[in-house]
Amino acid sequence: MPHDPYKALYIHIPFCVKRCGYCDFATQAISRESPLIDEYVEALVIDLRKRCKQGDLSQIETVYIGGGTPSHLGLNRLSSLLYALSISMDLTREDLEFTMEANPESLDERMVKDIWAMGVNRISIGVQSFDDAVLHILGRAHDAARARSAVREAQLRFENVSVDLMCGIPGQSRTSFEESVRTAIDLGVTHVSVYPLTIEPHTPFDKAVLSGLMEEPDDDVEAEHMLAAEELLSSAGYARYEVASYAKPGFESKHNTSYWTGVPYLGLGQSATTMTQNAERRMRVMNGQVIDDLNRPQMEAEDLMLGMRMACGIADERLAQAACFLSEAPDVMRELESEGLITHVDGRWRPTQRGWLCGNELYARLLDLA
Image (cartoon, rainbow, N blue to C red; front, side, top):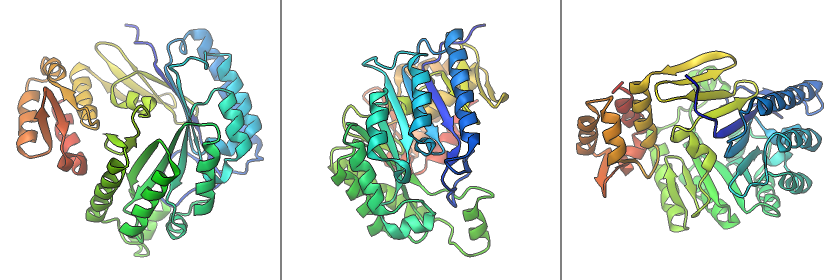
């Protein structure tokens, strides 16, 4: 059976100027002058042209170049990649969201102006903190002043500017985190993503925790920081539309929302994931290997779980559809409501504040339906 058309395109750039101590992504620290980067970009260009001829790009609604650090490619390579995209699909459509990630140390005014001219209309900057001491703990390649400058440079062309901030970092006070949130607000960005630090296995941070050189992140501190972020951002006119994402009205990330709403997406590049689906099956593939192969009941359970990542939640009609394949779903939703993890108002099931903070428990219960 054929699969539904891809609506989102993700292009992975696996290169950084350095690897941070917490990072477990498929990236490598490499000199910008390395010929390996040229070879990688050339392979992406060839793949784009092939996918275009196959018709895989004909219904794409969002494009996202992520990493790694796409801005680490430098302007010449980015120009080659963006040109290949421009002749493979229409980047001038009014409704197309085209995001590129950048880090402050490799973003400058010329790059901002050129990528904007070539079709990028949203930029996401990996700031993590506006506190030099915290940036030092994280091992970031930029300082706070460069982060502020990068945001201002992005705003020379981009109205849609997002920043990432991290919280719950050992050595990061609540005051420090709140000041970073306030700085993002004062700079006038339109979107803020807030992520608690996670210690991933086999990373330098994991080794530091195991050896006693670093404290393990405290769940209560992370919750305190997340609550502080919601209070500050909400009062400044940002709405929380996903567990970790806040936006000014009209600036919610369409691409990221596609991941949470079961939209088929195509991933190009090393360790990029492609999700294909039809009415009966959903499959995710990375580097030629199947990493998920879901039948219809499993798809329904996953959609309920992903729906609870979103502030809009799940409509009664959507729950009724899922119940055709998961008979226990309505009972489980009522149990979650009685436990204070979700609420039912105006025909929709939505996560509560406790549900946001205890997301792992909420999501596991819904996935267990399958």
